Image (cartoon, rainbow, N blue to C red; front, side, top):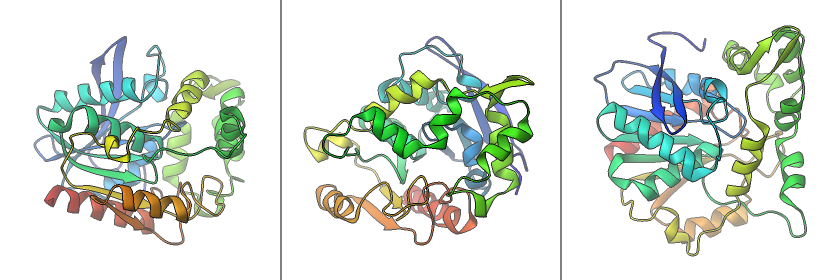
Length: 296
């Protein structure tokens, strides 16, 4: 499955400081689904999922500081990203189902909290519930451990796109599931000219955004504010490096399920944080959750 099959196109939406780049799939008069990517990613990381929703108008932004939106100025953080996504939804002329992967889950949660009137459904894809750092460990160390190659690459240059792909091939969460969609996503991430290519992701944006993922609400119910629509979350038991446990431990999942009973939670087995949106076995339940959420 390629990243640009079907009616894929790109457009821009005016936001504070410039233009937000957005990828889009499907007919313009179809119900809108907004997909939001992760912390060091871009919209093409969600192309496989977008193509699994052919009955929708799927729009997916490059978040501020990433992809073709990397030139947008800071500050970054969930509130700023949410404002950008609100501008995108308003440009479509109505409300939308929001689905966010990893950090994208935090962004769409903030949109639902701040502008529930624009959200017709909410799907969190292994992200969106505040994280907890191990006791005595600073966020920089957490970032280095958790993001691993994803953060390392932001400080590197590459002589060619082929070299960038080879940097990623040994990644423990991706190697066995390599695909054309992954290559298209990686190629799009690179900016500059050979032999001085580098990731489009702004390091300062990633680090500032990471800090927001650890901010705890005063009360768990505050997380979604006045949003009362359908909300679902899909999680995996393998993390960013294919390790166990996943982003959320069993204990954390149990605690959040009790604290947010209106957030329907589902564990997708045998996948990791990335393959949940890159493999058919992951994309199928995510797409089903989007459809179910729209039905309420």
